[in-house]
Length: 209
Image 1 (tube, rainbow, N blue to C red):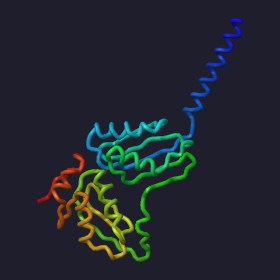
Image 2: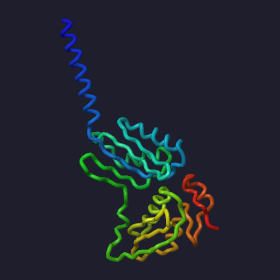
Image 3: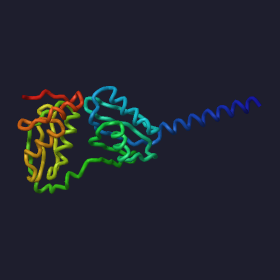
Image 4: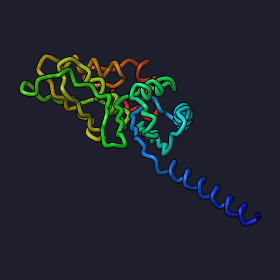
């Protein structure tokens, strides 16, 4: 009788171990979101806490300097891009570029199609835009990329040089006004003090008078 109980206990233990191991090895999707507005560790804590409402979230990583936020989630739950974007907004922050790499290798992104600008008619322009960090980079590139006629935009943190491809219908003044609206100065256009002050602390670049 004792031997039967002992064997039964072992079998139950092995079953529990196998179940836990199966859960640990389950396929997971990887989520990467660039979040605007993370200014301090408390902000990061608030974002992580909000996402822990999704039961099963693991491997959470947040870089306050760049605003990069990543985590993994069970593939079988099929967490959608829309749900992720909405959750960032519920936490009080602005989601920029988001990418989901599914366990099966499929990749999803919230990047726009850049107004479907014809590649054959593109020209490249450059503009100095003040900024400081990776979060500034995401904000500037998103603002300019959303302008009609712009196919792509890349801002370099070190040189503060914005390079954008467009079809010629977008003027330099329009680009300058757009980046000023999101808090970034150019040599000819300044962001309002109110908008600048609302930028996260890490984005407070040295303004040129």
